[in-house]
Length: 181
Image (tube, rainbow, N blue to C red):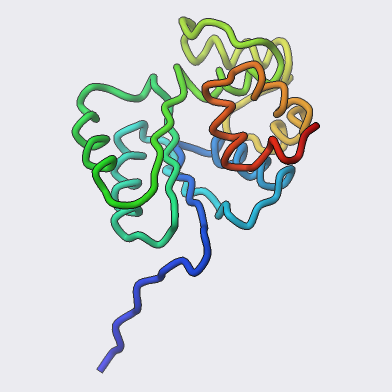
């Protein structure tokens, strides 16, 4: 008779990021390499699909309860009121979690590594173009080498100060304030 697989229970605090795509996955990997912490596991990449896909995957993972905390990150430009019910269901689950909606997209957050936060009225293609034309030549989503080449410890600290709303999440999750003067 086959044995049932026991449910994994975290014996120490471990945080799981559930993100929309490769850009977010690579960025979190970059943070982990610059600000190491045993609390942060590798992120779950939902490989695009927008907010609904991320929320569905997050709900599944949170219900499994294999981690101490879950951080769900997706772009506002992929969200809609149709996802409100799913967000409410996730918020009711009895485990520590946070839903972070980057407005309008993750590229806006990346731009904060190079300049002060600005309005969020541009569309995502405009943020990508601004990154490509001014700060990260040949920027394209999903290119981890480009992020690692142009975003360093100093730029991350700059972004946290430039865009406090989003920056504070990353500062807390990676204990960045402990690593800076």
